[in-house]
Image (cartoon, rainbow, N blue to C red; front, top):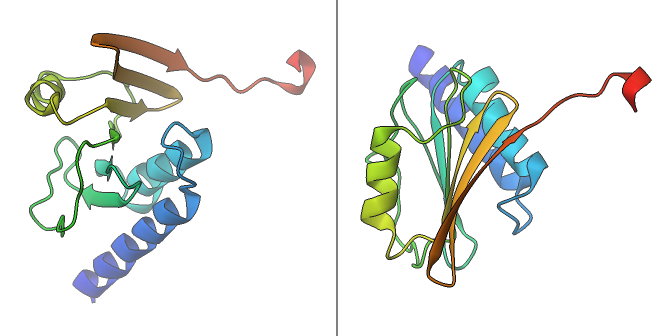
Length: 146
């Protein structure tokens, strides 16, 4: 039963993420669906989403601090990869040493990467041969501040 429940949860997570994707990997609602799958549905497991050249999603999950694609089908993935998005379910959005190793190894075929934390986003991207990095902290405005 536990394995069946985990399989069902993972299927629901993938459906949630796919349903939120509208060919815009920078979309906040899309990011929120990935975060929700990671933190709420999978109870703190890291989630990774790769958006390939044709805007097809490849989704995987891991532990609370690591994720790979060994148990997921990546057949048909087309390069260059538009974006690699993953969560840090413990809350901080930053690229770890492992993340930077992944970005540096994939840089020839990777256009951008995003890491999601609790109300935080960090993005790395390339444009005209230059690399950029930004971090965004999201804030919920109280009604009195709107």
